[in-house]
Length: 301
Image 1 (tube, rainbow, N blue to C red):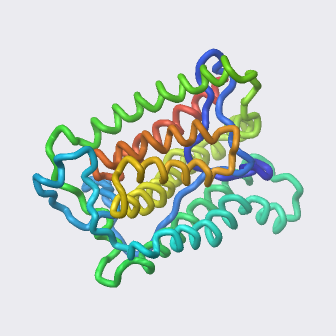
Image 2 (image 1 turned 180 degrees about the horizontal axis):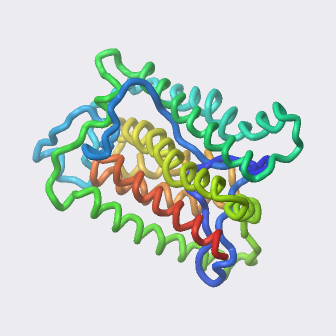
Image 3 (image 1 turned 30 degrees about the vertical axis):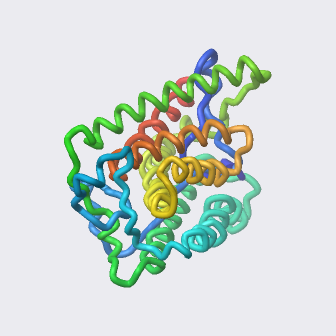
């Protein structure tokens, strides 16, 4: 994800373990998320997926996943909606956005501050585009605000606890996969000098990086890959297959072959957090914490 920063945003792949001097690879494109219209997104009431029911019956929480089979979209349109997002929002903005900015400014290489501020604007536009898309492709009787209703769940399914456990598990799994990759595959330097240069360039750049990676991108990607895709898939198959398939799509959408496995593992953990709580706040929190940790490692390495 890079064109200057060659950008795309989302879960920042990081290499932990033996060498903390090898942080994430900011794929030749950076990372992101998307959605819009009228809705009251209150973190107080927590982002509870694109689920329609605010109450869950005892029978619906007997298994691991609490996601409802009643979804705001027609089951036959799931993949067509995803294709619209990919080809009309994700690829033009997320993958090619910085190239367009460089062309408009007639610069072959954007300076760090311009690059990250442009990325922030691009990510916000993609987020708005996603919200609009999901609102107008949903069933007429469902308002966008209904996608974020909170579930009334037992205390053991508390989204804060699930977020902490998810973040701890994700950190451990990424450490292990990075260590095994170093052992069985020739280790290579995966440091991201472009991102580090941006972080060191100015306080404005640091602030923009935090907004992009820790707020806008996690929100957008969780809405798309967990809130929309995973929720939709669990209405047509068991939750394990749905988590596996949505994680494959999530990883592939980053267009980073060398980080595919790590991104897939991240998608699995985020998907499990969401299935367990039925609350997008959980996967958004884990995603944000992971990206924040990766930024810190990049900054101090």
